[in-house]
Image (cartoon, rainbow, N blue to C red; front, top):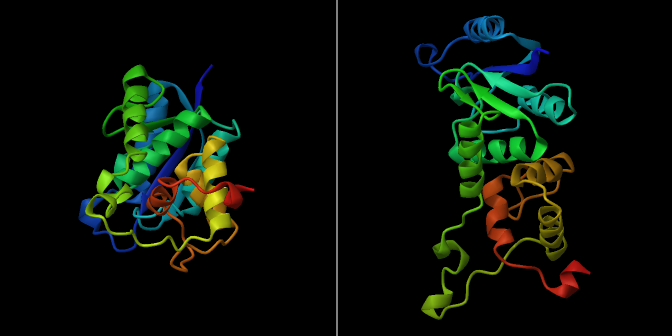
Length: 209
């Protein structure tokens, strides 16, 4: 049976044309690869948005389709069409592993359905969980109190519960963003980096009650 994949193409409004393939070129590359390898492209999702954020409707639709079992993975002509940020790539890889779907990048011959691809995804996903010791205990060793957290205790406790339930950092961010929960600084967009400092400290029993 043919492997089913969701194609994904993206350009950014401020991206210089000579530095990236246009949407038509990316679509052609995906279609030709599918024909050559016997894949079935369910559809091709598209975004005209920066790769410095994962809040893109086309990408989120592609991920949701894979998590719902509509397709076995997402295929892109170039890995940078998914994201420019290593942390976001790590979160995407972790989400793919947890969701049981693949990410395929034609330019790097990367396929998370293969053992080398799964190994690369595990390395990325593990790296996404790292928080430098200097951030987890920035002042304890100097004998000075750290800056108190500005995250409401009930929000911090919920983030810990979601993480304990097995949700990836990006999935938690998506949940908070969809519910329009403000960030500790009053912003409207949660990022995985926003969560890591919160997750370094367990909430008290009173906060989790």
